[in-house]
Length: 265
Image (cartoon, rainbow, N blue to C red; front, top):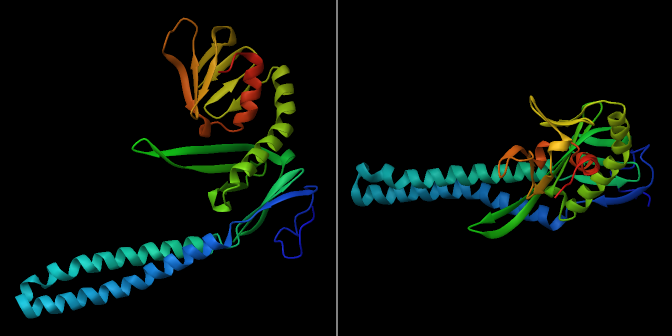
């Protein structure tokens, strides 16, 4: 697949064949603009209505009750204006947002321009996938995938890219795992300690802060609902360590390695 003449990714080089582009739907962006403009326009309208209510109150009850009649409308006017301005700014900032997936990397287009990252140049990727519930009722899932290159540049992919961002996130993870896992595994075999944010490991032990635990004393590592729980043999229900998946850079590299060293549930 080649980029079209209208694609913002024509300048991307060195990432191989284009596999897919991810562009937010135009309808959703226009809805944001319309809502934002409505709220911004509502600010002055509410202000005028508040002034009118103050005048009516003055005519009927005198000056003493004017503030009581006007202030609530002025507060609503300010809130509406600020909220609308925030929505418009967000729409402006993300208007050019798009992402492109390649055989050998990923690219992101924002107001700042094109950012690109080859899988071989990625230092770490973080994943935060959160399911939301209100009174026990599922209300949706948010996705944030953060890619950091060896040069320290960060590319952030989230739900602003549309409903297919989870598909993109999986592809990013697969690309990074394919590039990093062989290197990490070789470093482990060479006796090096591998760092994964709050956790670290080598061939002999798993580390959490200043604590260390031999693999022989870890019956299993449990990963459930975005949390990683490690128990020590013979300690019953108590966790030796517990962290969340979003805290762990290169989580899927970590997952593949510990799967070779202990049982993962």
